Image (tube, rainbow, N blue to C red; front, side):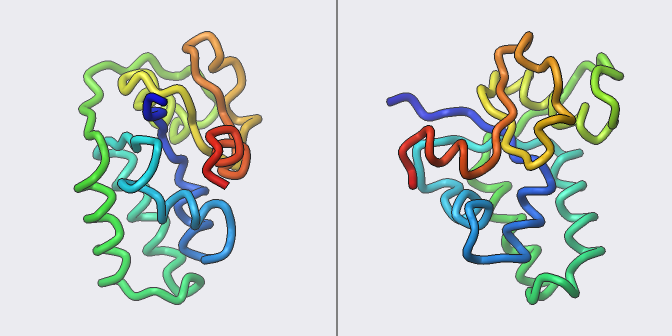
Length: 141
């Protein structure tokens, strides 16, 4: 089975930092070790970092731990430079940066808890799914 190309929305990354027993944590923990490939861009990693640092007190991890996690994600993920912007397509510009990355990376999935924020992305051949839906569909749970 070909590895699925995915983009992980910031809300999933933050959920994994807050709770080490849910599908979000399982997904983040499987990065670089499983049947999918994660795609990142500088703006997305910067958003992960910015939001995580604001909420660090809710996660139980240190700044050093966060930096190590982000470094690992950067090492094992496919990196993309976005050379075009056709915004706005979605209501939230931060969602547009996720969609732009997914299109550039030819990702099949955007993993998010906010599926309603990614309306009409099927025209790009992309599905918005939750971590549980993705992991179940791929037979990883």
